[in-house]
Amino acid sequence: MEFEKLISERYSVRSFKNEHLPQEVIDKILEAGHKAPTGCNYQPQRILVLNTDESVSRLKNCTRCHFDAPTAMLVCHNKNESWKRPYDGALSSEVDAAIVSTHMMLAAHNIGVGCCWVMHFNPSAMRETFNIPEEIDPTALLVMGYPSENAKPLDLHYKTRPIEETVFYGNFR
Image 1 (tube, rainbow, N blue to C red):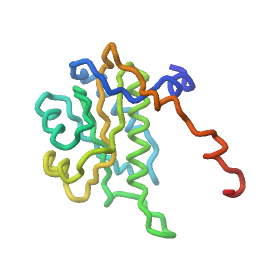
Image 2: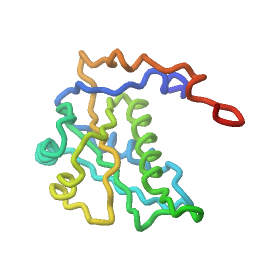
Image 3: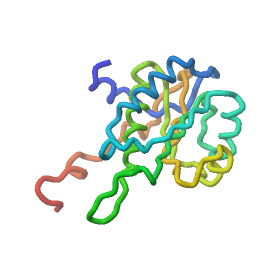
């Protein structure tokens, strides 16, 4: 798909067909995340794929925003494998995980898979439920699947602030 069309048509899907994604589709989405840039190419992302009835059922104990998606990917970052900004010690790994998530979300839409980026989840419940090690921090939950026939963007999707309120040249006002 042409990039401009891809970013214009993609929306957060919240209604899915009850059908797990085939492995070859999952692999394409994961490959897009694997190609994402990360700070100094450290690649601190860790991705947990949930594509069985059992794992998706367990996910529902960690978030109410699962939208009954048949598949999910929890994108995490290893803070011990992060590039660190020398001026203030800020870690790039959380930003890296967000970039990886964006690549995956766009790739999913490009191949006909609906996706919703969810941050409303309980990290402690995720850790306990999926045995996530202490050095791995959950960042983004991508719930996904084939959109149902009635899937559509929320009205809020079409509302944007004027670009003059978000972009500045030279200095902030």
